[in-house]
Length: 476
Image (tube, rainbow, N blue to C red; front, side, top):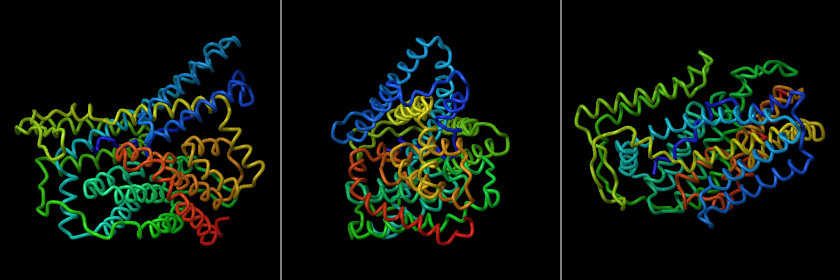
């Protein structure tokens, strides 16, 4: 159940999906094909693939399949066209850059998923679930506790990791109460995205803005200015949460009242996971190395921990077909946890990375940013960026903005940081946290289940913008 982790820590991760394509677009041999039949066909293919992703709960077609197919078709068409123009090497170069971006993402996520799977097997989440039940908390109290934790953990652990960790607790406590699990998952996505918006480390988009060392028209966008978004982000979460509160079942979860103990090494593995996240940040911030190096180094520590558990005669507890069955016991092997990674989610992100990379190579990301800032003005454009990020991942959208580098005040840069971070909460596919939970709570947290609450989420989106414009007007 926990193995769908982390598409996660997107927040600490990689430059951006379309970096290679947009950098190459500066080269004189790269053609702008946004008005060519090839570009239009590529957009249509990507659109159809996303429609298939949205319909997963009805078609039961795993979300990775349509986007992987779309990615292959888009890049094949691009390669064919460049071949006909006598430029056979340009496409291959761009494709390799995108593959490198994905390789870093995949390895990062595999490490995170492996840790989560191991903590699950060591009864970490089951122990937390029974502890919460023993506290006598009802569903409504649990709704607020998990949401609050998500809001305050995501600025450090990033929104994706936070949402997946807390959803593991929600699903363990909620059990068969689908209404509670659905609303809590929506709440976690909103809270994690909002919490990630007011910290440079909370989301990849905030990290991009901070590292760009932007000199705005009235000063430098430095580390501490991001925390001016704390109250607007809090409002973004509290408004929809207040509406959802009354739809949460007003009773208490049922389950065993005795405290279930964690297995040997559980707390040490939790500590190693936190250390691994810290190493990812430190490798990136101080050594200028990809965060995945810190994650893989942390995985080696988990492997040594697995070796220690083997020496102590520990077994891996494999669950039976029914959740109540203990299942069989086999010698502890960390590679079994690697095998349990959510491969559908990993391949889904491969498809998204390659599709968006292809569209960026064709020139669409630059076209969108130029159209918005050239025709709408800074405020309206920045608000629109948030709406776009509900459909297209916020990373390439923010990268397009940073590539264009519009002349804006600090307040406007913070506005686009806020909207790009929280706009993805409007739809379940608008953020990595939402996509991850669709996999983790498959069949319960769905696209259309989230869509029913989009109007109240939009109220929070509007309220957060108004709050920023009012409280931070000195930054404009």
